[in-house]
Amino acid sequence: MAKKKVQIILFSESVSANVTPILDSRMQPSEVVFIAITSLQQAVNSTSALIEEKGITTRTVFIDDAWNFNELLMTVSALLQNPDKVDYELNISGGNKVLAIAAYEIFKQANLGIFQVNQTSDAVVWLNNPEKKETINLEDHLSIERYFQLQGVAVTHQQTSKISQEAQRLGERWVKRARYLTKGLALLNHLASTANNLKLYSRRLSSQEYYNAQLQELVGSLEYYCLVKLEKKRLVFSSEESRAFCNGFWLEEYVFSELDKIATECDFIQDVARGVEVVWDYGNSTVRNELDVVFLANNRLFIIECKARNFLAQRKSGINTIYKMEALLHRLGGKNTCGIIASFGNFNIHNKERARLMGLCILEAEKLLDLKKHIFRIMQDVEK
Image 1: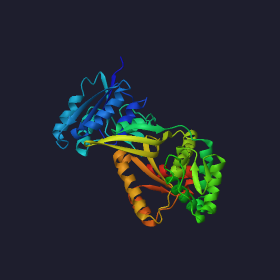
Image 2 (image 1 turned 60 degrees about the vertical axis):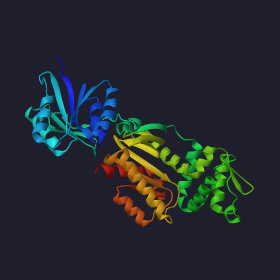
Image 3 (image 1 turned 90 degrees about the horizontal axis):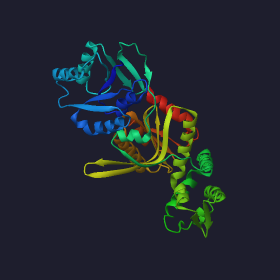
Image 4 (image 1 turned 180 degrees about the vertical axis):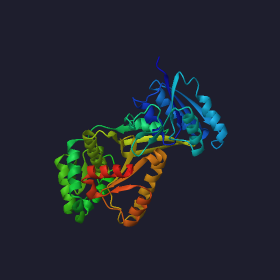
C-alpha cells in the first residue's frame, strides 16, 4: 500500500514558494500542513483556499513565539505521526532561521526529505534527499488571477483577448518613429484628454497645432482606420475606445500585443493580461487599482506601467510614477515581483537613478521597438 504523502511547509510571505511545489504533478501531496506565525493568518487562509480547490486537504499550526527553539522542536516533532505509513517532506523556504533550524534538525534526524524553493530559478533544491531525487524545475500552474488570490487580492476584471490588427499596426508604426513623433503624440494625448465629453470632440486647435506636421501624420493614420476625423479644427473621435486609445492606451495595447507574441513563441511566459483591475482590503477601506500590463513567467510576477508622456520636463510626475510602482510591488507581490515602466518619452537622469535604486526597470521609446530582447534581459537579470 502506497504511503500517504504530506508536505509540511514553513509558511513564507513569498507565497509562490509555498504553493508551486504543491501544484507540481511530481510532488503533489494529499495533505499539506502549514507552520506559520499568527500574523500571517490571512495569507494562510488565502493559500489554503486555493490548494483545497485541488482536492488537497490543509491544516495549519500557528506559533506565537518563533524564537523559542526547544518549543519549536517539539512542535515540529509532534507533526511526524506514523512515519511508517506517511511520506513526509519539508518545504523549508519560509520561517525565520530559528524555526528553519528546528524543523531541519527534526527532519534530518528522521532522514526525511527536506527542500527549498530557489525563487530566482523557480527550482526545488534538496537539502536532505534520502530518495536521491533530482533538482526539479517547477511546473507553471499559477495564473495571474490565482497569483493575486494568494496575496489576498481579488481580480475583478482583466483583458486577455488579442487587440485589433489596426491597433497593432498603429502602435508598431508610432514606436518605430519614436524620435520624430514624441511631441506630436504628446499633443494627441492632450487633445484626446480634452474630448472627454458626450460628443467626443477636442478643444479647438491653434493654427500652430493645426499645421503641426507630426500631428498631421498621426491624424492621417487614425483617419485611415476611421478612429478620428478632423472637423473645424477639432478632433472628433469615433468612439470612447478610440479616444482612450489616443489618450495613451495605444502604448498599453502595443506592449500587451508584443508580450502576447512572446508568450506564443516561448513557453516560460505562462499568462499575460492587460487592464487588470485589482481590489484588496486595507483596514476598514477597500483599495482599487488598475494595472496596465501583467505577466507571469516561471511563477514570477511582472507588472508593467505604460506611460505615453515625456517625463524629461516633469520631474515630479516621473518620481510619482516611480513611487507608485514601488508601493504596488510591495503590496501585490513583494520581493518576488518585478516592476517595469514602459515609457514612450524619456525620464530625466535623477528619476532613472531613483528607479534603479528601487529595483525598477525603465524601458524608454527606442527600447520598446525591440521589446522581446529587453524583456528577456530583464528576466535574466532577475534570475541572477
